Amino acid sequence: MTEKTLWVAIIGAGPAGYYTAEALTKHNDKALVKVRVDIMDCLPTPFGLIRAGVAPDHQSIKNVTRRYENTNLRDDVRFVGNIALGRDISVQEVSELYDAVVLATGAAKDRPLGVGGESLNGVIGSGAFVSWYNSHPDFRDLAPDLTVPAVTVIGNGNVAVDVARVLAKTAHEMETSDLAGHAARAIHSSPIRDIYIVGRRGPLEASFTPKEMGEFNELENCIALVNPDHLPDENDAAIMDALTGQQKKNMVHLRKMAENRPEQKPVRLHLMFYHRPVKILGEQRVCGIQLEKTRVESNGKCIGTGKIETLPTGLVVPCIGYKTSPIPDIPYDDQAGRFTNEDGFIAPGLYCVGWARRGPSGTIGTNKPDGIGIAAKILTSVTASGKQGRIGLDALAAERGLKLVTFQDWKKIEAAEIAAASGDHPRAKFSSVDDMVEVVS
Ligand code: NAP
Image (cartoon, rainbow, N blue to C red):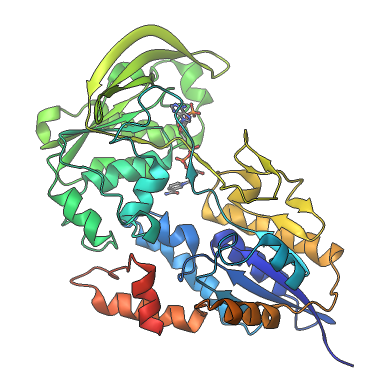
């Protein structure tokens, strides 16, 4: 009797894709129907946000890729890089080749801020800015003008904290990072002296986490400053007792900052709570930003007070969340910024997982139960129907002259990046697809 195969295509080789592949193949040894997974990515490199989103100075977080490598070393899982859905192959074609298709495409599009002046030069969303300093090929030519004395980062999440910290750290502090060479040159020669992190609500409503906040108190050249009036009253037992563990730890770091003085270090990081952007100023380029003071009501809602102040600033980086990129013919919820789905189910044989399913929230680990859930759905509702799977994909790729990149190819790219690194840098990342493909040709 010939072995039956359930072919699954996962689109997007980030954490959600890998956790799904791991869960789908976990019981293959005992299963009558073997699941075989192709994880496709538009880039020649796997690991999605781990490579292009996680901050370059947070190398320990990137160690999770070892787990994904183990999944990739199985013969029932294959990484297929350098193939883009919509560009090289259509959703319909993938659906014809595989029994199930899982969209694990993340959320790479910046949400608009919705204020005047947003399209001025010098307003760059965090999706683009983070991708630029992380060597993502699509953003290598972004060339943000950092020859400015002040930068404004909008948002009170960990992305805002990452962006501000990467701008604030010295070359010395980044010597064990894999910051893109083009970004290192721009950042470390920049005259930036003031970095503002603007939160529309208060410190108790902020979503940044204590470990990340605490790093601001350890910077070599940059002093973090907070208006003490923006912190909750330590003597108010009702407030203090109601704080969560995360809020309490954040307060410890913020109180320390409230005692700092601007002249202590050459660069200042201003944590500005209770301010929301109302207009970005400038003719062609950003020269300032108008902020409205806010207050937060007991239901957590932020209300404008009508008091406006202007910050001179040469760069604005909104870090206010992301949207999944729509794909033609796939139902899309524009308001939520993700595919329309019911617990990951989009249509028979078509699923989504991770940020493409639930929106841009949670940690890397949150994608694990997500992947397990989608795998369970597929294993209980999709049957092996004799589709061609990877044989069909390879034939189609050959016909179209696509240069697919395998996991073994990726290991060559990775080895070249490690070999090119100088000093204590873990790797010097390629930022061009052509350069990567050349390594494996
Ligand atoms: P986030 O945590 O949701 O923060 C978004 C911030 O933007 C919030 O402070 C939000 O304020 C603000 N915002 C939204 N719309 C706004 C507007 N129109 N005007 C002004 N402010 C606005 O999202 P994120 O920072 O993009 O992070 C995404 C996910 O990745 C999170 O789960 C995060 O924890 C994770 N992440 C983790 C790490 C890490 O662990 N080191 C690093 C980076 C990212 P409101 O609260 O008032 O809506």
